[in-house]
Image 1 (cartoon, one colour):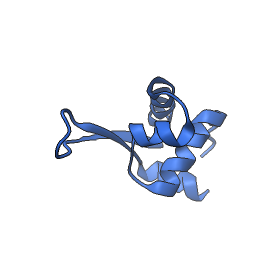
Image 2: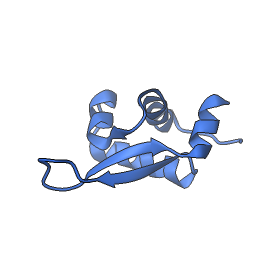
Image 3: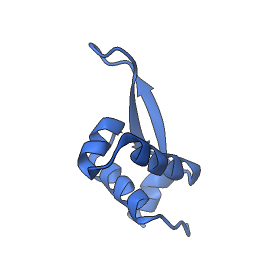
Image 4: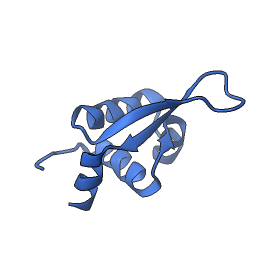
Length: 80
């Protein structure tokens, strides 16, 4: 796979690769960036087929929590 990632998309990708399923909120804390910026990176990774968003109901939360997980292609890219 010849996929190029921006520095910030790479940072998000590396964090998800290292930590598995992570919430957007966790990504914003880990990267020190806002949700809009992180969301743009997740969209970039999704368009490249490397990651996807998964919404899950969490007990005590008012609305579903959005998590980011690597796709099979993302796992393969991580190993490359």
